[in-house]
Amino acid sequence: MEPEEYTQIEERGPTRWLIGKIRENHPELRGASGIARAAKIMAVDNLKIRRSMKAWRRKGVESLVGPSLTVPPAELLSSGLRSFKEYLLDLFRYPDEVKVASRALIKPMIYLSMLQVKMSGIPRAYLGSARTSASFLSPKQFVEFALPALMEMCDYYTRRDISVVLHLDDDWTPFFHYFKDLPRGTYIINLDGKSDIFKAKEILGDQMCIMGDVPADLLKLGEPDEVDEYCRRLIMEVGAEGGFILSSGCSMPADAKPENVRAMIRSVQKYRP
Image 1 (cartoon, rainbow, N blue to C red):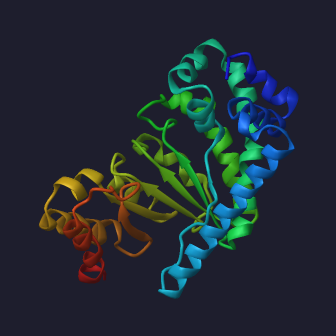
Image 2 (cartoon, helix red, strand yellow; image 1 turned 60 degrees about the vertical axis):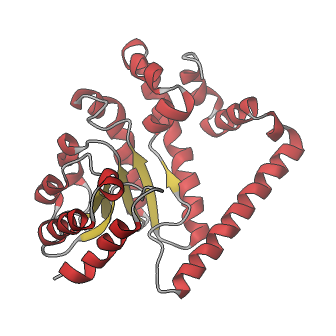
């Protein structure tokens, strides 16, 4: 998108604008046949997801979330639409226009996520952020450009009894205190190894469930005894008094050592209280 399109998002309506932008970049989705093709792709994908969820449920494994993967407006603008470099510059060049676009994009992001929640039947939504972390934004920028939309989305889910998995990549440690205002016992903060998960326990341990954060580099390059020791510390310190889910930091590396993955999984039975 170009900078003049920030205001067009609100003027044309965010859903209409987004559909137009998709068609502009994907000619195969234009016209009635394109709409039918897109609908078929979404239907097939959702069917595959539901079948996969049922298969895992038969094995006693419950899915944390369904296909309800969404992001706050600042993430959408800075990645898929504007590019991160241009977005950061726009915070100085067109701050008011960026805020207008962010406010306009809140509803379509929420509605898409809620549609997927209803289709999956799982009352939990995934809300992912990375480029609005302290690795990229100053506290002032975060409060001005990212936090209002994030809190509004969280409030929408809370009022509808939807639990939220806050999947936060990169370093969010300086921003942890902003999440203390969220309702107690309805959020999972999922960290990827860049944030200080032990600080998260200190600040948010009595507020929300903490999930993480065996680092990707440890699972790929470390040894089983190193993985075991880190998991032991997580379980004993972050997991003290409950409210903790042991997991990899972000996603499991495709080239993680199988013996390290086994060490992580076995640590749960080995060290849990």
